[in-house]
Image (cartoon, rainbow, N blue to C red):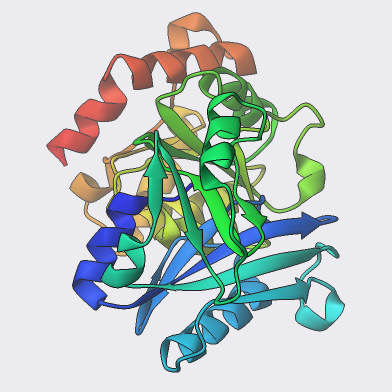
Amino acid sequence: MSFDLKTINEHIKKYKFIARILILKTYGSVPRNEGTSMLVWSGGQLGTIGGGTLEYQATQSAIKILNSDMGSTITKLNLGPDMGQCCGGSVELLIEILDSKKIKLILEDEGFFARPISKNQKTLNVSALFKNYRNKSLPIKSVLKDGWLFEPLTKTKQPIWIYGAGHVGTAIVQILSQLEQFSITCIDTSNDRYPTNFPNNVDKLITAQPAHVVKYAPPKTHHLILTYSHALDLEICNQLLKQNFLSAGLIGSKTKWARFKKRLNELGYTFEQINRIICPIGNPSLGKSPQEIAIGVASMLLTNDKIIKFAKEA
């Protein structure tokens, strides 16, 4: 993950002061990776650090800081039973208040940002850190050192949210994760559902209720629905049709899709709205194995085929 200057500036222009919650460090099993961030302002938020009590407590702290003069804060939260989170690990969070003046303090060098986040920061050889990033002797992730936060700048990528880390979801991830133009988030209900060889550059979003995080996806996102449950697939479709999205694809047969269309229509959606979701996905002529479906989906995304056409016509 990285520092999305464009999005942050857009929200500062609109709300003047915003809080950015960043996962600095993780310990044990947690719902999101290090470097994951979200924005919070009075009356709203963008993104998610995993939902549940963790996110609620973090956003409440961010709002409290926004309404005071506390400045940036680093806190550690344990994700145990007392919090109602099943992960069992812990996270170290930075809550940083940003406005137009703070943004001007950020030092930029070839796609990386550094800024002081505490009043007692030490003198730091920022140029040397930039050099280490360019030479790849430091990992491309957020680094906190001597009161300075150093992190890469977001490159514009096309977001893709994949619901389900099963055989088909993983096959799609394995292909798309090798392409630099995509930013991939894979959502599932447990860390155990992800294979051990899951790509490191794909953001895991672990939540007991995947349909509830749909609203946190950026508006122009490709959504691929491939969970283990027809009921969950249907609820994700339901939540998705309430949002703006670039495109959406659902795994399944024509029979499954006919049932889903009937149920979604009964929920109040028009067939024009429902047909923004594509089912089945991929290229049936290639076959039905996970790898063949994945190749078909990747081809559709790369060639601006049907999955894009439907989104533009909606």
